[in-house]
Structures are given as C-alpha cells and as structure tokens.
Image (cartoon, rainbow, N blue to C red; front, side, top):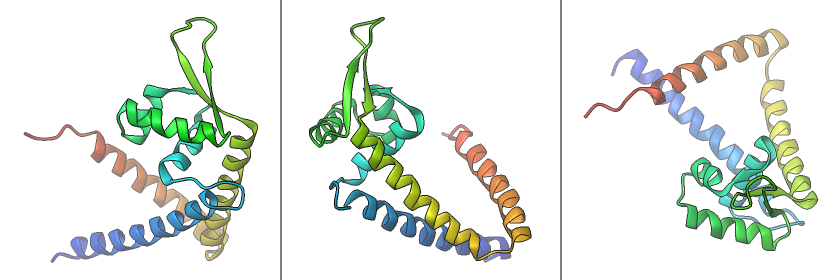
Length: 154
C-alpha cells in the first residue's frame, strides 16, 4: 500500500466519523420534541430551507428518488404541517412545495444544531489553523466535485 493509499484510507475513516456525527445531529433534530421525521423528510426540509420552494421533480432529483416516492415523502411532511403545496399563478399545472412557518422553525433548528457541531469542530483549532483548514477543505471539495463530474468509462 502506497503512502497516498494509506492516507486515502485514513481520510475515508475520518469522513465516515464526521458523517456519523452529522447523522446524530440530524437525528436529534428530526426526533426532537416538536416532530418525528425520517431522514428523507429531514433532507427535504433542509433542501427547501436552503433553496426555497421547489417542484416535486426537483426535490426528487435532490434526494435521488422517483417522483412517486417524493410525493409520498411530501405527503408525510405536509400531514405534519411542515410544508404546503402551492400552485403557480403563471402556470396552474406547476405545483411548488414550500416550507410552512412550522417547517421553517424545524429548518432553523437543524441549521443551528449543525452550526453548533461545526463551531465545536473548528473550536479545536487556532484561528490560523482554521484559515488553513478552510483553504485546504475547499481545495479537497473542488477535487471531489471534479471527480464526480468526469464521464464514467464504459
């Protein structure tokens, strides 16, 4: 195993550990006293909170599920009073899903929990280390995106 392979395996383990920490934070937000959400419902609220109202097809693409599955997910969070369907005034065939005030409150709670975890992680570093980390993390994120955008060889 080359040194790069060992570091790649170490990075994999670290990323899995960090993902597990975020999964725990998301589960805490999803199962808080105000609502019980599954991870797909939580990710739907998070996407709507970040991006604003979206069509069902756009939500399905984001979650990588079929549109009929997305319809079931939206039905569930709609029953919980966290989203509503809004018909477009310009094109009555277009229906957008948007957060309700209760959904916005859940979204803000999730954002605050995630930011708390980020603050704790960054707090382990000095300010100079934080700056270096952010530069390096951006570079790693760009490299990962470029890998994902390459065509798959047949």
